[in-house]
Amino acid sequence: MKFPHRRQFLHLVAGAAALPALSRIAWPQTYPSRPITMIVPFPAGGPLDTIARIMAEGMRGWLGQPIIIENVSGAGGTLGVGRVARSAGDGYTLGAGFLGTHVINGAIYALQYDVLNDFEPVSRFAGSSWLIVAKNSMPATDLKGLIAWLKANPDKASQGTAGVGSPHHVAGVFFQKETGTRFHFVPYRGAAPAMQDLVAGQIDMIIDSPTITLPQVRAGTIKAYAVAAESRLATAPDIPTVDEAGLPGFYVSGWSALWAPKGTPKNVIAKLNDATVNAFNDPAVSQRLADIGQELPPPDQQTPEALRSFQKAEIEKWWPIIKAAGIKAE
Image (cartoon, rainbow, N blue to C red):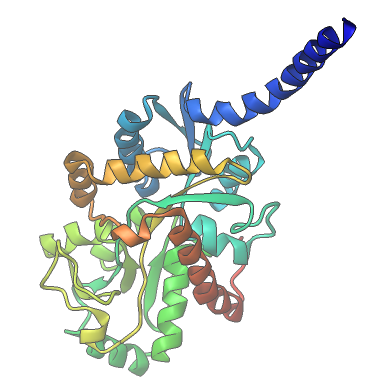
């Protein structure tokens, strides 16, 4: 008579032991149950911050929870990205980043995290192919003419950058490598003051995003030579590509993306990715991004796997250029 009771007891013990495992399996299915924090590793108001806020608002409807932007700036974005790397992989802390934070910084800083392996990719956000522009008084009328002028005047010209090791600086080093030219780099505290000096004629050229260059090109205060991409910009179809202008393969884009801490469950990553794709399909979101010169990644580039492959390819492209030039963070 004792055996049935013993069997019932063992069933109860087994069931109780299974509860924590079941809870661990079930909890991601209810994600998210509270607000999510998205860390932007730069001050409010910059390009990445603007894109992150547009995307956060677009993702909110799909997730059913707000995404709160937290700006953690400093050390070229490494403080904010490091904060994400140290966060729990529960889907409630995410990190927005771009070419500088998740590719270039890995080559110029001694980091406490690995830019590729310490994060789970979620999705690319948006991006823009950069423009090669110069002051209005530059005598060259096209890109071939600019390259010829730079070769004829070595070390006399200057390019503005957003600081040593910034994407603008690295793009300039890439330009020198591909064209055999030499010119000086003038670091600024951001792209905006560099553009002000270009308009004023204090520096000769800049390689930067349409967000900051196109308004000045349209106003006639600077001249554009080419877009550093395979195809022309939809927002500026009259500007030739570098392939058309005589510098094939000189591609530079200012892309942005979203990552989670390493170990974040796959179904949480999938739900976050679904939310980004849902935001892309919202006409209001895509229009707001287009208004600031951003283009959405094609559908086959909107997956976590595509982001990882893209980031690897960018590392393989830029790290040798950076290391050969001896660029180090100051």
